[in-house]
Length: 356
Length: 195
Image (cartoon, rainbow over all chains, first blue to last red; front, side, top):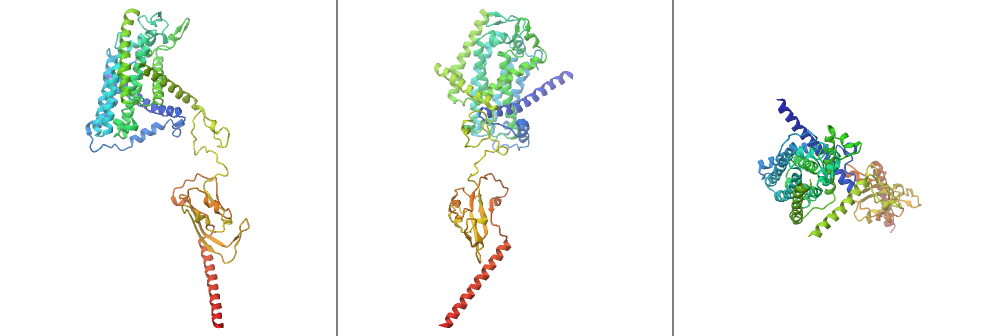
């Protein structure tokens, strides 16, 4: 009984966290966009408008759930749940701190990548079920985009896996700090196993992973359908893309999925490239900063800080860069990112064999 | 192709530095200063929002916004109503039986304004009425924000006469007219009798 209870608590905790994050993610997005555009953003509801999104959620809850007469009811009603659950399940295999992860899977990375692709299915269901030309156009664009960008993202991830030699995310995390059992070398020359900190993160253990990180980050923007890759929702052309017809709580679920996805892809990037829950502060001589800031709650702190920085960069990019055209989108994916990711994978192999 | 790609990255980076600059200068709030101030157009940094009901941009004292009528100075000449392009001024005049008094610039008043309504919902703020007014009793003020719950509240009534007073003056006028008519008829009769 206790065994199952633990899993329920973990699941509810993760759900509560993603809800909480979505609330303040939306608030942060609105504030950041406002400041970038020299506006003030929400100011009236609560101190500094902090309760604005809560008010929005209440509004969405009491709205009438409208189902279009010509919609495929089953697909239409299931779609938001599938979109959200696909993202939510991804959280299951990601470590928050040393020894703290919901499910310690050997194939964790593979599992996350597989379960995230289910989101495409949800989006297609939403688009098709709405029986609306804008929705289906958005859904088709989204499917084309997500499937295309999974390839560079996948190869960027494989180049990490080749360095790490494991798919278990907890093991990959442990390798990037002072708790690592094996030797790690900064840029392949300087042994930093005892120094740890930022020096032993994956992007510095194998510098070509910086390129892989950028490729993964760009592809993850595309996978979470965020600007500049937001052609599936393209407000100016498609009203709102695949979620045009959704109202009330179903719309809120699509929104929740988008913000959970932002957090999840950033978390994967952090785990694979930026040292997961390891501290960025290295041991320098007698100042054992890394030893002092490792273990216990520090892990959660570092994970959350790093992820929030990446989420901040996502928001920053969204309010800077205009939307890609479809052909430019595919050009970038197939002619630039995919070949670069292949090169990264090749370099990874060489690096693992001869340098590490 | 390759150059395009590098160019894309460089221009994106330029854009990103620009937006982050704005993000971090957002702690500067806009100062509420008058448009005539030298610094008005020099506030290039910080947020630009004026939180309107709490903050207001000062307007010139001689602002030309909503109309106001100094009814004591009005000689009810009806020129403003005639010149108004949108017919938003509605005046009903009652002739006085004698000169009522003088306006502040010395013009003799001979008419009562039983009704002097300006429909601000129709007004287009052209200011023609203030130009034609011989006694300068209709003016534009610096008052511009008036929110009402009923459309009829936007019809400003400037007449200071009550309905009873108006009725009384009308009765007086009719009485005078009737007396004059009678006098005229009497004079005619006398004339006719004389002829």
